[in-house]
Image (cartoon, rainbow, N blue to C red; front, side, top):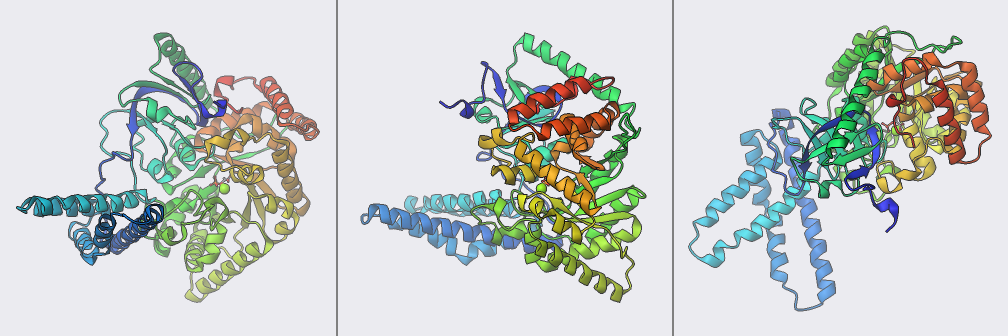
Length: 603
Ligand code: PEP
Ligand code: MG
């Protein structure tokens, strides 16, 4: 078997991909989506309509699945087909009373559709159990199977979570997969580590785990099948390793590694508020990436100098309705006032790809979501939704230093269109007498090869670039960033990536606009050294927990040395050469206060 299909190298050691650093030792809780009990969730009165709509869509999906299955079986078996079975299921799905009864239950109980469906099933079971004729009584099985299909379709919805809310002890969550929505709803007091079979270095579940400071390893292939709830497990997020049922010597070894890690991590805390200035005086602003305005409380305690990326799409994930202008305004205003005078870059919705919401149900049947209706494309299609967000950001800009940033730009026209919509929002606000910052800075994410190639032209229509290396690597290397099978190609030190970064940083410099980096590369010392050496990068933005480490690291290097390193790297033609060279340089640069124990596994 190809080695890439295996994750176990020693008897009990799984090698995966590090998604969030730190080491934890604990008991596993294995999440089995198929067996998962139906969650009960209260739903606000305003959201009841959306919940009913979500149920209708799940019924429609089930109906088309069932029709496909029936057609397929008819084709395969030609005749002698037991059509009544399918017809019975189809009839149940077409019966309007299912939608009506579930809608009534949603309304009466102010609950989610899954729970209402569960109640309906109980009601049917009750009714059927009173039927005397055994043949008729057993017809409840057809109903059960049909409702189970609808339930599966509902549970697949991104607004649903499979993570139990009522854990009474700390656990390491092991799952085949975790959606961004699952991860967002984790109880951080209880979930101390995460291990998943699938996923890549920059899967959104990993990004959220990092912002919650939960060590996470992804891409462990078969772990969730090999492990049982209650078994002890070690998650080493620094090296992307998971050890199942550790031996006593492994336990001792990792306990001491963990203590060492915590010791160095604590040592960094002492200097976290100091500026990040290289030995020869180059100041780099170190900012935080956030997924929610609730993350703001952690910024100060980690020494963040503002927000370099607010992933606002998380306002939509886990909700059934779109937050209106007022709700968004309140949220962005909170960001602006809390951080003032420090800046915050509000990225407009990057929905699509693996970040889905109930709103997108009709647009989610795309064969290639990462190449589909995502980010700025989504906003330019749903202009009202885009305008609502832009008006909210503009109004909040009167209360602090906010900037706007568009994701996934690939063409000058997209940028011009987005800017024209922004201008129309300003006009609307003027007419209504709202205050806003008329000269609010507008920037774009550089995260596609096309944006790099036309960076000089794009620079004419915006005032800053922020390089999104997570997607830039995905789209340059043609690998799905959440697919562990191709994660070996996720190589930030590939000459292809370095040339992309170099071209983009140069283009910004030539145009006289600012350039920063907000992808995961920015939070890793090896890559940060290279990024600083490549040109005039003024800002690095990362998950809050990486900030003290990167600030300390910057204080130990000189710009001159970083430039020399970058000049050598530009001449290297293979990933292997670049990696060998960069790792040797970082080892040399690791002086006072930063230990190699704090380095993630960048291999
Ligand atoms: C990126 O692509 O590097 C980025 C920062 O954006 P996201 O991870 O949210 O796609
Ligand atoms: Mg991106």
